[in-house]
Length: 327
Ligand code: SF4
Image (tube, rainbow, N blue to C red):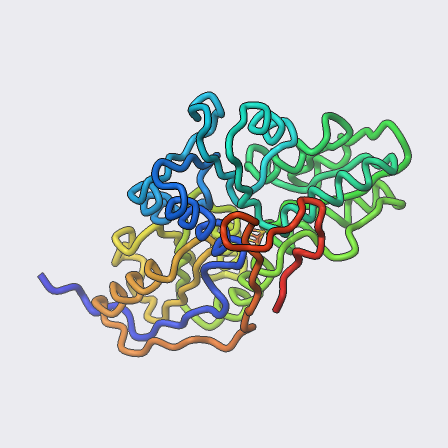
């Protein structure tokens, strides 16, 4: 049966898809597999994408949450989201060969927390409870770091001292984070803010691109897995701008009824979604009638992060904040 012709035009957000931290994390697992052979253990999904995780599983990666699942002498990789100090120490105590795929922009936040804690600061962390990045960042300290998920949470923060700094999860909605930060500053006028916001360049650029894309189309498709924080934020943002939006893990998830009476379709992808999935979504939209596929203008990203020592990179120390994006 031929598909009904529902779609006229597809606009692709620019930038979309993989960021430098995701590229690096996947390359670390692939290089470890090539160098040490299977299996390679990975603490948590290396990045929040079903396709990527299944692909690496097929190549010999085993994804675990608990270090008890890792046999003695194994090679273990920390995911791009980062880990707590306790987990890092436990992995070292058990003698695993560890490679750290924590995104350098998350490590930068960890370094800032450790540095300011030594100066007597307590922290307000803006982020989503239960997200592994938040657990990793909060877990840089044993106490004195308070999570706020929304504006209302700020009123419940009771720091013990007068020195308070704020840090954020790297993949938040830029607009939501700004609103929460304004409340933090209202309640704690002397709060110390990061010199440069913790929300990363990739999150910011993909959200900026959706702000251009959403008003130009009738419906937005976000390629990303349900666990991906930055992909969820892209879908919410498009909807907030008044354009219906749907998130899909793969092209098979597209439902023709989404495009009924909505002939211009915008497509974007979260920072952990590979380009092959975008291509498959576009191919499906062609089957639904799309004749014109057009890339929007947008920021060109040229950011690369160095690989760790032992996997082809010169490596950087965990306290090396110069591992910032090169563009
Ligand atoms: Fe790093 Fe941002 Fe990519 Fe997360 S989304 S891996 S913080 S560059």
